[in-house]
Image (cartoon, rainbow, N blue to C red; front, side, top):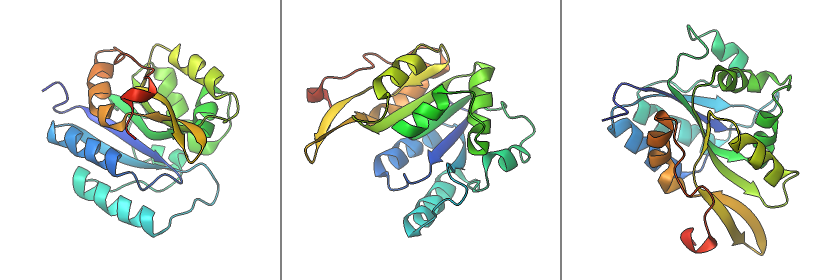
Length: 199
């Protein structure tokens, strides 16, 4: 298997913990022999860690066999020998505001220090986009991020939710996207028609 023994940093941004579809894909990555390292990607100085977070944390630790790092990523970097020692980084789900911060690599946010340095290393990064259609400069940010050779997007498209348009990744394609990204390839098509997305 192409993923056997590969080190995958799996980051979950703050506020996005209840994602059964993502946990199912993590199961598939682990079953393929990948070594998974879960991170809590805090985006505020005082991140919320509610009961759902604690439940997801416990599940992740059971799947991966590793403790989920909850400290800021600047502090977490001190726990690893090399910031870019991973073979690939997955950020799922990736909300629109977090995508904007990744695009702006001039950010001084401590919480983004590790992913920004990782982006600069040229190693593959997989993003599973989940964003409101009215997120500021969303489409422009998507165009910029996809132009980077090391960035690979889980195929996504527009869907209507409660009368509002959002952009949603096909999370069931996350595993396949990682396989392709390990070979520096993008799973196509990256932009899906609404009929190809789950209801």
